[in-house]
Length: 153
Ligand code: ZN
Image 1 (tube, rainbow, N blue to C red):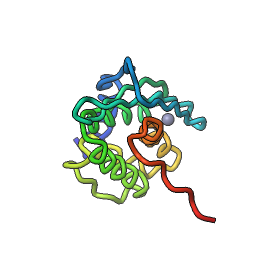
Image 2: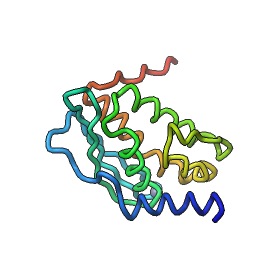
Image 3: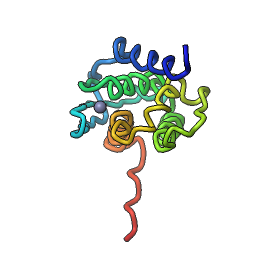
Image 4: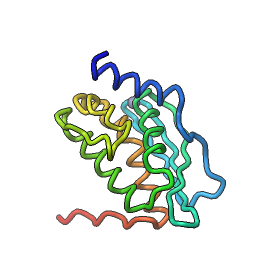
């Protein structure tokens, strides 16, 4: 099996068997993001456990890439301290901006490495990033991370 088809299998598996899918009872922050070009929707929720570990809840509809990405997100960051989760989120965003030329670190990105090929297709990058953008938004709403400073003119 080629690496490319292995990666496709990983994405399909997350799509068909989403990890941790479902909403939280008491989220601290919720963000609903849509990708109008593809019709993807993600409702992302965050909370924190007693030790400060992230708790993730999500639901969504849309293409296999968008939904698999949310499942991979859950698998990667659930229970992690927010700072650790942010490192992974930034690594995934960087991967998606690599135009498919990156050699992603499986130690950091786990099944997220399967999305490296998606980064070659500009139309699908938004699909892959949707859940991760919603995560950042939900974390900001929950006061778990600082909002990004506004770009200076
Ligand atoms: Zn999509």
